[in-house]
Length: 199
Image (cartoon, rainbow, N blue to C red; front, side, top):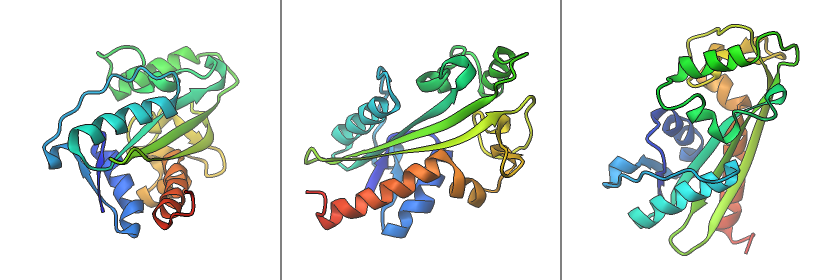
């Protein structure tokens, strides 16, 4: 089965493909099926934004579409940047600018707890949808470390591994990350859907 990823993020495509290919699902980019959809993420939750993106791309392509909305929620910032993680600080900031802003916002703050959240939604042309949510708790480092990953990965520290997300191999990250957790749950939900057990 072919599914269109409602994202232009090649990193997300790799993570989705790594897990869903095991089920015989071929995840492709919008550009692979001649679709270019810009979706305004107006949802108040990760779940709402994932649905908005998946539904729009499904309608445009006529194929099942899968979307992930994810972000970093920091306790000391009342859950911010949250659904605004990719837009934190405005459009002029890149990944480095966003995590530097985050570190500046936490300057002097001893409570460094936070979590990455990922919500996945797949919309089918028949109106059905399959959803899953994954989380990964950690802390916010005092300085960036590591060269892997993307986004806030260099400043998201995993105490149990004594490494940031950016210091993990892709395999290590998939095994523990919010998106990895969400994808494993999504995989189960999708299998149930295909087997008709959730009807």
